[in-house]
View (cartoon, rainbow, N blue to C red):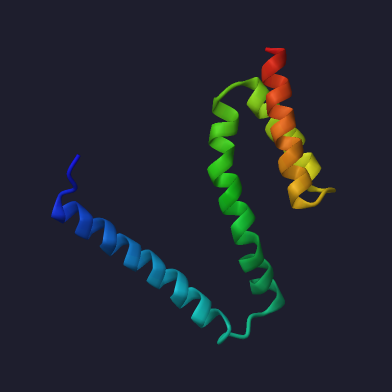
Length: 99
């Protein structure tokens, strides 16, 4: 399989733009004094994006995955990250085995 030069340039261009936007965000974040309300809004962005990515697949694949996502969400309110990952994996494997 050969990689076309135009495709390679497009991929490299997208990588540069992605990297630049991330670096610019980190460089500019420390220059602004945010109100507590704005800081809370910025702190809520990563979990909101994660839920937006996970929820469609968790709800569209079947009841074992949906139930495992709910169990994992409940575990996330009490347990550290690594334990939550373990609970999620065990829940989805266990519920798929039941089906």
